[in-house]
Image 1 (cartoon, rainbow, N blue to C red):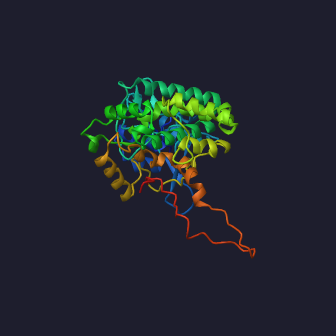
Image 2: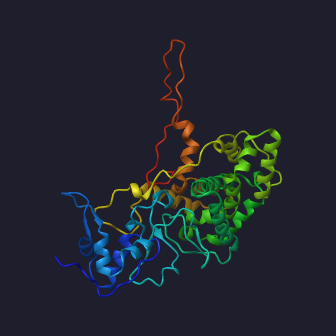
Image 3: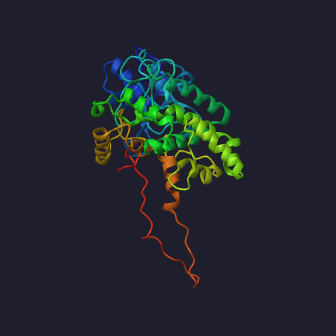
Length: 379
């Protein structure tokens, strides 16, 4: 069978998923996507309908060297990239950056550290139930936080940065859920940004947990620089005088002069006492671990009905000044650090009885189930 050659060749976008590129090629040539997909793929195993792309066929069809395609399409690279560096869910990127790529929407696999398009001042991630374009023209501090995030990445590497940023976002969400008297000036900034991103009276149409993440992102990145630093980790684990110095730096970053550590209900103290001694966490869901779909689709995965109800409930009752951070800390984007916070309750160590046997606490601990990719933790 002669190899397919398309008359019009368009380049792929950076970090674009292969199915998105094939869909744009099919649209530009008036072809059915699934028909073109079958011509460019092969079955992953005999007697199966699951198919995978054949890089040489795609290169021949587009007339572009395989090296050029693999430079933009991570799924074509040999050897395969370290998928832990990428989010496990595909998502749209900056619509300004992808506007020059014709044929339909561009769906991308973005790295964990990419939250803002600094060129066009557009909030990109994390992916959410609804896909809303969020301009940051009125929030330059969020754009500056992305540049600071990249500096942390260059200094500490992706693993420490990934853990520190997600932990900081989780901490900010927990602090946002506390009353005003227990917070500093950062609490008022989160409300101000939330009012700009989700205008009062429009929450049912503009609410997005990803936008709540944008509201706390500047303080989260500032706190992440502290959590990623080996020096401040030693201060958090050191003598009472060292710990006082650590607490003073936290108070400065959060603009909370009255901050005092507490044994209970203080996420920062919990990190300093427990998690600062642990190695950085790796993502619990990785794109490369997923089985290829039988019929590739470019839309968001089907959501659990409970997730949709939780999204609608958060939108109806959203009040930036009243426990607004609860929707953020229950989002699946924070699954890795959320699971670590619950790990003591998921796996209690057995206790020995006087007769040498073990007590059974299986019915006395709260049950815990890791949520699916499409579920929020609140559900």
